Amino acid sequence: MSPDSVLNTIEKLVNEVLSQEKEYFLVEVKIKPTNNIKVYVDGDNGISIEKCVQFNRSLYKKISVADLFPAGDFSLEVSSPGVDKPLRSKRQYLKNMGRNVQVLFNDGSEKTGKLTEVTDADFQVLHGGKVSGRRTNIDDQNSPFGKILRDVPRLSGVD
Image 1 (cartoon, helix red, strand yellow):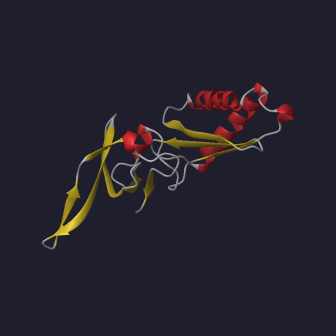
Image 2 (cartoon, helix red, strand yellow; image 1 turned 45 degrees about the vertical axis):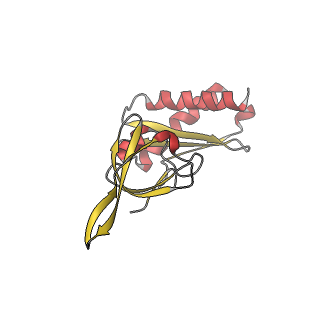
Image 3 (cartoon, one colour; image 1 turned 135 degrees about the vertical axis):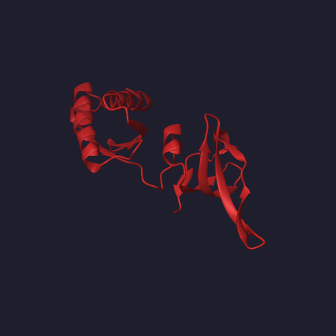
């Protein structure tokens, strides 16, 4: 089975496990060459360690039954993404509304400020400055998701 096929199968199995509890969602799956599977799961209201352990146990059984790795030669870690991990879905952006974030763009520019709005196509980060000694918002333009730099943290907590 190709690495992409294994990854797709694991994502499908994760979504099966999560389907019983709609407040939780898959963020990302990574597989290292040593067959170490890292699954990042989040929830609309966060996720507890106990929930990660529960999902790990269920998912481990499903991966074992699917016989994706010879002789069960794999390890599995299920955790929540840390603040240094990129936001990958609209649900994560919505969950982080009102928080201070850093956004890195394809053109090398960045914005730091409060995530104030999320739509299907874009988001808004307001960052402040001082004008005549008073704090004011100096940038309130929406930023399309397509202009965000990939493969590095897109939005990171800077609180």
